[in-house]
Length: 82
Image (tube, rainbow, N blue to C red; front, side, top):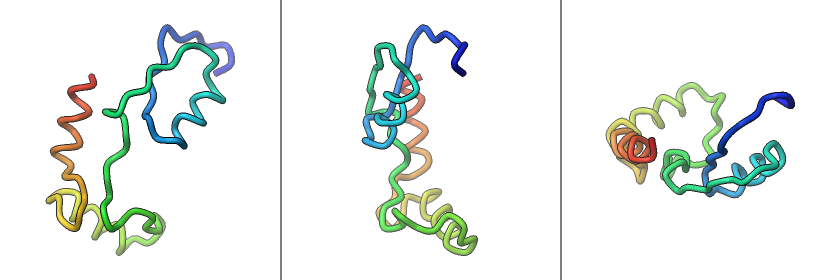
């Protein structure tokens, strides 16, 4: 990507995303909360290689249960950004 030119760079406000973006991109960066990843509630930090745990995460996200952000709300936020 070293030879690819970008007109703009938009990034989540999360620390990890900011740090990665600042390493990769040297121009001005627009940070926006609407680009923050979905809130997985009590499943934050779940081992993503555990298939059964990920099924529970996805079920909760689809309904907004267990402190998760619902997928519908997540998509509304993302679409407002777009």
